[in-house]
Length: 222
Length: 229
Image (cartoon, rainbow over all chains, first blue to last red):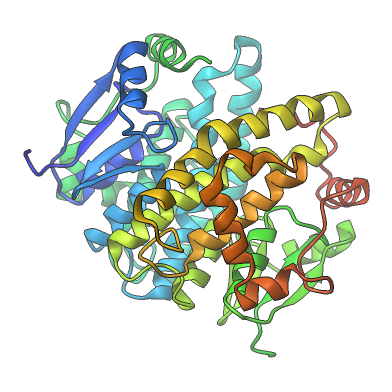
């Protein structure tokens, strides 16, 4: 066993992408086991390694962890990206949960039927620009610090940069009225571990395409 | 300031119920402000109290906390219901993630059409008995302890009991193939703080009814159809 965390998921973003981001941001190398067929998935279930018969699965520190939130919290805790005390952790959790709600819309977007896609894109734009981005713009403006919480790089910053880039892929001008977020995006993108993750050849996965959607439906369809 | 946590939500279960359970299990008294009108909600919005314009919101320790999971994690940690180290916390988070997903199927139930309700009831029972309950039954069987994690009462136990009782409300004999869970249910229900919460007159909310659905729709202007998942 290599000692590196091992990620089991489809070869695409989905629910595993925040885990890849966080490990990368923490400078932690990891291995990936890509699910390509239904048989592979059924074998995992039969072997009893998926507590709730679902992926993501991350094998780390002797545990077979499932549930994305649990995995991310563990990584954040282990690599000191979770604030210095309970109150900072509460802020990070609040921010991450909000961003996750936005990311959920992006996650589902490739799976929406063609006739619903435009409406869903409008909803994403609406939520991003009216509900979520204004909050973080204000947080950054009010304390004037480089990072969202406690003047220190944390899971919340990683989650936000991931979300910004994901929304921008669909709505390129989305940061137009958010100068703090524009500066934040630049700052985060230049952090060495993140910069490396944003370069070609990293484990970062491309935007979901039809082939990815097909693979997911083939493997997991009920 | 009273010093007690103050919960802002509708007078009903919804996403706030898990928070009521956890505070109660921890022996923490709390106050509640019930949203009944759109005006109350708009006042909260305008006052900047709702970070993402949503409830639940809990005022505690000088914070206006939103996002159910963030609130629950904070309470769990503060009252020592989150395990003794990072690995126990990881297990608790995993287990809570599962019961959260299960209760998610029930959360939208009151908002479904009568026809969809019947279908969803079957989905809830199927998921409970084929995916979630077997997982927790195995955890308890494998270690033989009274509690899910670290031989110590935790958030995971509270959340699982809440989920069990909610599924039983949909099918009363749903635990029949799960002897460990039956014993677990009896044990956790008899913990003094939990027992108190299960008695009439506590702040536990009843099964959501049409009045609750109307209130939520009215306050949130949520008049669209909810589809089952």
